[in-house]
Image 1 (cartoon, helix red, strand yellow):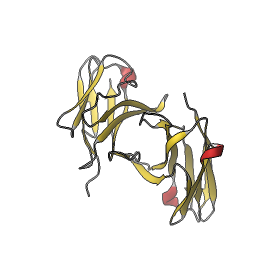
Image 2 (cartoon, each protein chain N blue to C red):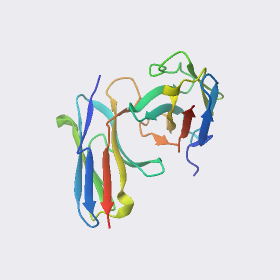
Image 3 (cartoon, rainbow over the protein chains, first blue to last red):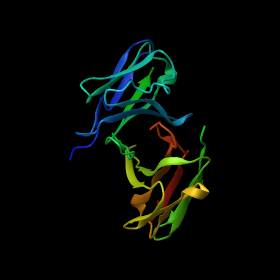
Image 4 (cartoon, each protein chain N blue to C red):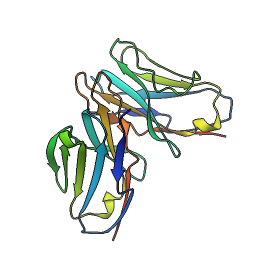
Length: 113
Length: 110
């Protein structure tokens, strides 16, 4: 079946602009995660959604970052007033309810100039 | 919080050689996954292995949860095995987020 999809694959934006990154999880997966991979920090957790529960936002680096998940499926990660240190690959993953194995999308490479 | 350490950080092999990658973690885990990140950046699931031993073709993995380590074995390596291998764990408790090691960068030369 179809895997996790993300769009856009690449995004170049000017410092100070807002960006939206989209994730479409595997059909039937109730859990959705966002991670970030950057040269200086490795891979780090950002936010986790599970069904209708309140999301775990403990990994968001600042209040410029927010995410929502509509209808329990598609998720959007929004970064406001982008900074150069936001440049990274943003990865989305999903997993089945009650299972821990996470499957990853291809990522969105964000470059802030 | 939990620490995840991978070794070696870098590895160069000749095609056909075998290798062992190690992942140590500092606390109990609910989940341990091994991934291969290919040159295009895609994370490919290799094993979901919080305990025990699994095999998939030329790859196998063993996790000894009581001693807090996991091993990934690559046999008869091929150039397509090149890339970065990550170990990631979900700490025991009520969370689901993966905590990542820094990876082992593998280059297999023809």
